[in-house]
Length: 315
Image (cartoon, rainbow, N blue to C red; front, side, top):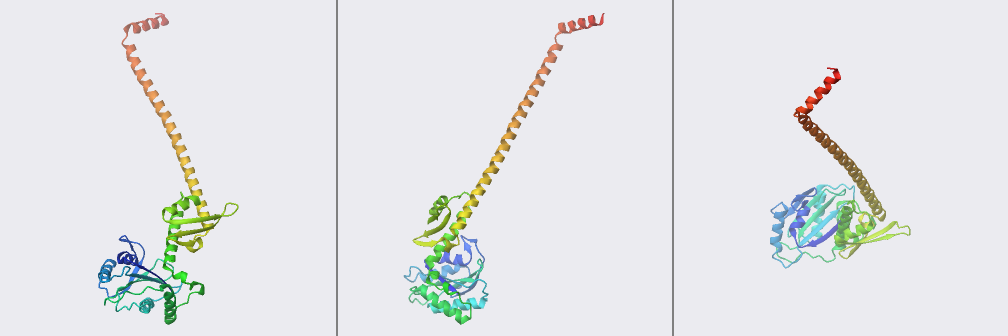
């Protein structure tokens, strides 16, 4: 089990995220596992109660948010999740009898994880929950809870403070999601276009090519925190392949449009000729109708035609 902690100013957005909501809409499957010193059970109501307590303090960042994450494939019972959350709060100094706490479980990842929201301002008006040395404390407390509850230990290489740095993790998640959504745009077919779109979203990027022009490396920076492509699940090779696929898709779309436009042009040209032919035939028919009555109204022509006919018959 590992913990990732951040602090903030607004209870509303934090608890809405915990509840799986985004701007009032369902965002991800979530479940409220428990709450302490809170009468409400909806995120807005709990946020209002926490704000009422926090307003009595000078604390500028009263929101404490920690996610507890277990190894992929490790089965953790609901009772174990609650015990782990309770022990975490207690060992961090947030006694659940003195602090307002809400615990949510999310089901959007392949590994078990919960989100703990603590009001750093206690109910009795004492000093706010201390945030110093959170990274190191998270490591030690998670190790203690893992042993206490008999849970699986993480590999040693995962026990670094960088894994518990909330700023680093926030950057990873933001860059990862921004890359994913940007690369799905088929209009992005080059690293130059990709870099420009990322820049518009606050992410600076660097791309490295070999002597043959093949993309072999990439790194990103968001809010003064740098990460490598491998840290956010986007290797240079994978990015290059996706850009190539985008170019192919764009070419196919253009080819399909060209074929469609050519067919439309041909059909339009044919319609024009058919329209001209129909108009010609209609006009010709009208001329013939007008000529025939005029001939019938001229008696001298009819008399001449009768004489000619009689001579031909020898009359």
